[in-house]
Length: 433
Image (cartoon, rainbow, N blue to C red):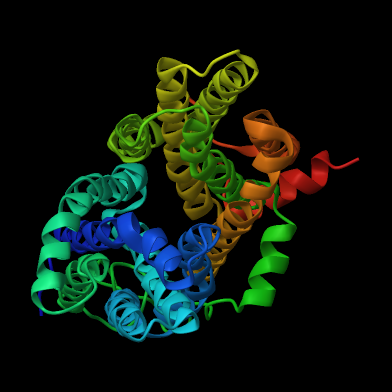
């Protein structure tokens, strides 16, 4: 029986990500406002968005474990499906004005975020080792279209909700529910096979019956802790998310404090989102051409520039729209470089039987780290202003650089192939004092 074309499979993954991105963006625009209206407390707006990130962190590893057992198709279909159910729970919670149910629904919506992140690895599975970065970045880049389309559904969704007798702000979650359901339907049509890895469900090639069984979480973490390169890859992914979340969620608040209007705040956020996704195909190409390490190193430079501009704005007498726009653009670009470079490095530096488990673990840590930053950033901003927010990002990038010290000599650079995971471990032992 012939297997599906990798290009066709990647097209389905891109479509699923586009639907999911639109659903996330449609609901994201009003989630905080709904939490504020349910409780009457502005502080709860931030916790609504944190719930989505936290939910993605909780679901990411279980979805990866399901992918390891039963294949990417089932994992992605379930992930997007739970997101659709979460949107329905949000609608029910708004109808009865019950905050705990609302937060549960928001966390379930985070399942679509986790599935979207796993989709980038599913694209790698069917692309082959020479096109890892490009395949991954095309799926990530599809989020750009969804993120641009999603907020445009907010007003029509509100009118739809009002016409159906709902709270107007709940209406966009009807759009989110439909978009997540379409993503689940698209994922359910992905090719299936006998297992979870070489393709969405081992599409590209079968595996030998004597291949090692997928590692469990504890074994995988012990494995990666002893190997500097994959450990550094995970740290890169996690710190990139934490730095981005820390600065991004507080920039609108900082701008509001500086008397910017909502239009200006919206422009800066849109520029930031464009930086996050629009250039991801370029970074995927860079990763395949010059190695993931080159992309990560470039990301460090971009993040440092973003933080520097943030500090300059924080200490200036008045905030500058130009400075903040440039800083948030660079913040998004740096995040994209860390995500693409770190994910490609992780995929290239671990054996097949450890890949899916570690991919899920890194996505879980990434989202949980982002949730922690979202939860604490308001307190930090109140205590030390926008300067302290950027100082926190500086600490995170220094932590990432500490982990790079052992990994960098072992990584792939132009003209030098990256050692296999076993060779890398042997080199690390020989270079240890």
